[in-house]
Length: 359
Image 1 (cartoon, helix red, strand yellow):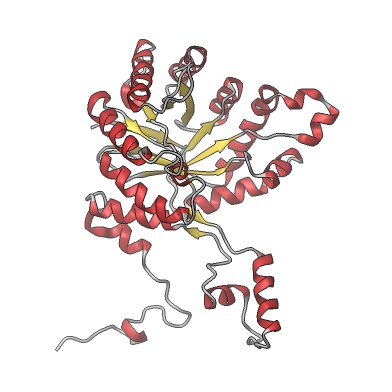
Image 2: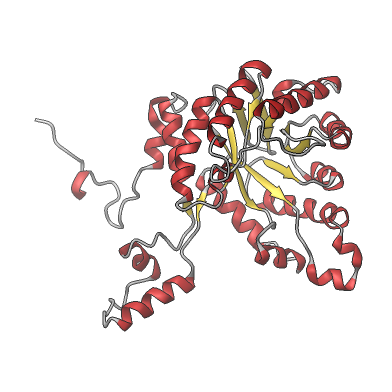
């Protein structure tokens, strides 16, 4: 069985055909997150640390660390900050060190800048996953030597110098090329995790079918593990979680072994809570004085003020159980176990000590 080993200093994550689905947490990424990018520019890594802790608590097996920040203010002072080749090699090792300080999850080093990848490899403890190499000739010659030098696994994305093809046969051919070129460097197929590229189903009706077919071919013909940006499938559509929840178990059934995704349901913001309180006050409804924000949002079905596992994690854990990758359903039961209320610890059903009696 193909197994890709990713390690921190003290913990191992295994991506494999016979393993539970591997969740690679995507939240530590300043791309499209202006607040995070601004904090990083100020040297504030508190959100990076909080995201690492929350994703690990939600069940992420590996944490992706992306250093693609844009430092808008510093650009005005120093034009070098407009160049990611200058910014990311400095930023990546510090981000990795901060993540490793608060969690023992293995790391996925994510950058398009080779200097950032190498500096990340120097900073990472254990055996990180490198993200990524493509079929582009220049990228192959820059990244594969790093993979060999540091003896790490790598994500291989199925596009090349011609771009991203809508033809799944072309994307398979690119993946095969990367696997073969990696072999030339002495890198085994089990250390290649192929991303076959998930297209948005809103733009391409066959996107789901294509990726399922591709994953089967990659598994059966190349013997490699696979991953994807899971939320790409639902881009631009309503109720994205509903689509993602269906897509992930279907992809697992086709043989996909991991995904880069958000494992947490984002908490209800303080602003949303304040809006709800104002709305209720305008209706003349008086809330109990001791009702805190968490009790309020739960009462009105708004979610939670605390980070918690997202619905996608529920779908993945259910699929693990159904695919017999969760012996006796232990993880599923643990995931769904309701914490006892204060004063009810150690009590059985309906709060009675000792549980149900047998006659």
